[in-house]
Every structure is written in structure tokens, then in C-alpha cells.
Length: 106
Image (cartoon, rainbow, N blue to C red; front, side, top):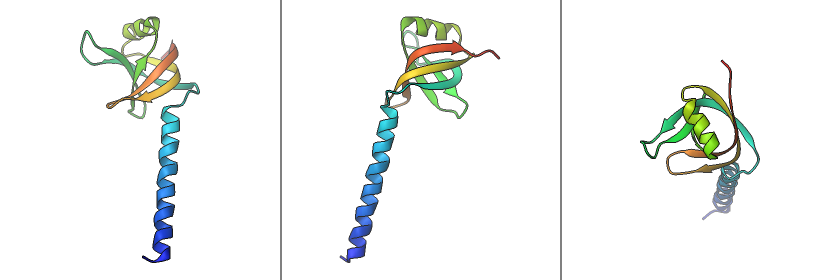
């Protein structure tokens, strides 16, 4: 195998590893971030969970205190600002650990 082919493959492997590690750092990030979206429920009762859908169409399930959960359930269809301390990913959707939730006036 020519040397240039091996160098190219090694460079490609390094680039793929760098991209994968950046994505993992973002999803597992513990720095607080703000998300703006519309509240709705996902799943079926009694296992329904609050979620938001952002302007770009992404869906985030909200994991928070019982107070946060009740507030979101009572404000379905409203726009909210969610301050999240952690972002994790399940098979179907990303999950935000909500620190604070605020209704956005329309």
C-alpha cells in the first residue's frame, strides 16, 4: 500500500475521532444552557412527559423537579425558556435537566 494512502487513512481516522469527541462533550455538557420552545407532552398517560419543541424543530424532553413538571403541564402550548444544567440523549430524543423554567410572554 502506498505511503500516501496510509497517511490519508490515518488523517481521516483522526478527523473522525475529533468530531465524535466534540459531539460527546456537547451532549454530556454540564454547563448551563438556555432553550426556547413550545411546551407539549410526549408519551401516553400515566407515563406522559413534558417536552419542548424549538424553532428549528428539535424536541427535548424535560427532566426536572415536580414543581417544574407541574408548571410545564399547566402551560402546554405556551412558549417557555428552559435553563438546563445537563443535556443527555436517549434512543429517541435529547433530555434537558431543567434548573429553571420561565413562561415567555407573547
